[in-house]
Figure 1 (cartoon, one colour):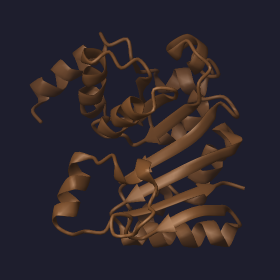
Figure 2 (spheres, one colour):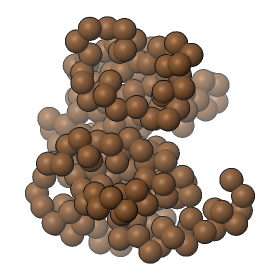
Figure 3 (cartoon, rainbow, N blue to C red):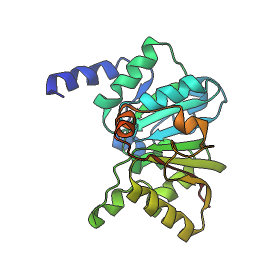
Figure 4 (tube, rainbow, N blue to C red):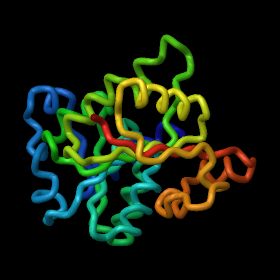
Length: 224
């Protein structure tokens, strides 16, 4: 994407009522006024709050919002030029139960209050296979602790990925730490009885993976 195109998207994001871009200082210094107030201030309801972490173009967040109008969705990514597409679609199609937050996932516990979130989706994260990159792996123990802080006690996390490595790493970590694995499948499109919300929504890249017969894995779990 050219720099002019990126700048245009950044400028357009600033005009969208469904895009929120706090500074790092705002979050770290607890000056972000939406923390603890997403339902009342943004969505104007008390429906369940669901996050998609590393939402990319935002297509999964938008599709979930369309499929579940009785829930609120927030797509989160540091790359605003990417989720511009999802934000623009939501504005154009008047999808009021989805918003986008531009921030690093490392700051997630500064953007949401304790027990504010009902569910988390992690869709096709970078598996960060090299050992020195493990601190960026989105299901490592440090990230799970952040998720636990903002999730309700019965809150769940969904991991959908094309990476067998990420699937195996996460399962091993969950079992080893005593977390509760509710469902696990290393090929959801070939297994009968796979959760419908997992197989009925596909990202652009996911459809490409499927065309190449690449297995899509899925884990649903609770953090103890």
